[in-house]
Image (cartoon, rainbow, N blue to C red; front, side):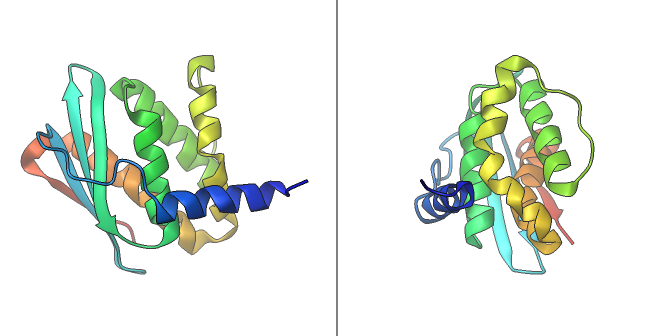
Length: 155
């Protein structure tokens, strides 16, 4: 039987090599750029927000397999969610990879949080935590800045 770590590694490699939602949105309502100067990861997160719901989300950029996989998985789990739900997922994910505490997620978000599990192994490698959280920080910056185009650096 396949070791859980091997399964997680396969998921990260698959999303790193074949990222989902990897393109610029044609008509975004929000966007932000993210940059990790320590390793050179760069990302642009595009959002189409309708009311309080994330109607569509995508990203472009270049970086390591972890940052690419994190962005790919993030876009899959936040698409269709409310802004509050997406922020709750980010808070839970961030707490998990940094060793912090987070509030219990509603049952409706548990499955989405479980989809992010393959990335939680980065907590053993503090420098890689920045790679895994960069897309989420860019996502948050996009929500705050709209089309003005926020920028976030992880250092």
